[in-house]
Image (tube, rainbow, N blue to C red; front, side, top):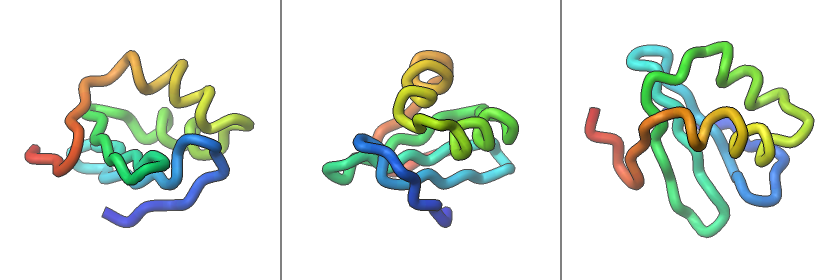
Amino acid sequence: MKRKTVKSSNIVSIGYAIEPQILEVEFNGGAVYYYKEVGPVAVLKLIFADSVGSHFAKSIKSKYQYEKGTYNG
């Protein structure tokens, strides 16, 4: 999955796979998390948010299931 670098003090980059709607988030320190069933509108709002980190914490982190490390589908 190709990632886009974002301006954030905590998040390095974001990737997205339309099918099966997986959001990939790389954090400072190298940890990668895969958030499941995230729609494309939610991803666009995250990428273009004034504060990517705040938007992520409020709109993604607590609302979607995730896996740390390699996504196994």
